[in-house]
Image 1 (cartoon, rainbow, N blue to C red):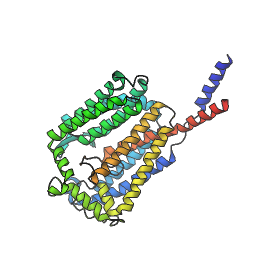
Image 2 (cartoon, helix red, strand yellow):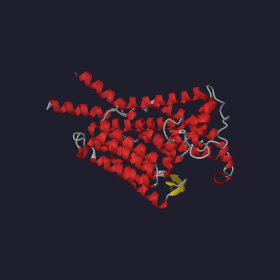
Image 3 (tube, rainbow, N blue to C red):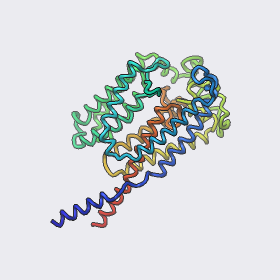
Image 4 (cartoon, rainbow, N blue to C red):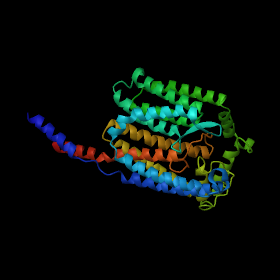
Length: 394
């Protein structure tokens, strides 16, 4: 009877512990990177915005003003996401993934086409990219399944098959758009989630062979993928066509030198470098801020990612750990791949730089995802209080 009363008393003490505040270092790093990113969108885009009278009406601040609006909306979404408990995300994880799949199907039917690819769909006048929703859907629902099958993750039936089926459906839909870069990221994040969830290493060998086969097929079937491989191997072989973009990117990076030409002083953004405010904004950063400025921005990203993993290691439950690790890994992956593309370390894949590249849906989703990490950080005081109480009881 006494032990039962003690247990009830301990439980009531657990309930009395309220969630703490968000992790301040993580929040400040996010806001600092976002602020720099919005400024760089203005600097990188005003020339092309002024020239493109068809889309922007000649408004030099067109892209900047839209990015600023989405940034403010994203901060609001981040703060809202930080208030929702992890039980909420676990409960609705399946529906987030299901919504992403439905939208990916809808894109193939009523999506808007750009540069030969259907990747966007208009919802209430806003261009939405379902692949961004699919990324967080995979992280949330894979975390739910890993917790559900925690004792069977070493088996093929529970630790591999359901995850591979989901990835096959999503990647298959992305190939039809086509959207190779999103396919690569989603396969990679799915593999990371399975690995930290406890899937046997043996299955990853077979998966690597399968992914390599898909990559070979994509390069063979999709002409634009083959052209990108050729441009990566020798961009100066065809500087007027397939190698043009990466050559202009390398010119921008090289001309920046150690200290840069100065904020707003880029030359390559004057209609030389395509996608200067989007996928190749890092090249403009290097040109205007130089090696030192670009290095400082990468250090800020590194601190944000390290802090994200720190929060993951201090979570109170397995689901929070998996989600936090997944989102942080997604952020790290996109930063590394974007910089690698701009410097021609890997073929051009169309991966944006988080919090910097122009794009409303991507920015909103990224800030909402970081809001989930902030929500997880609120529960760290509960874990610490429980640990302290346990030590006192001993």
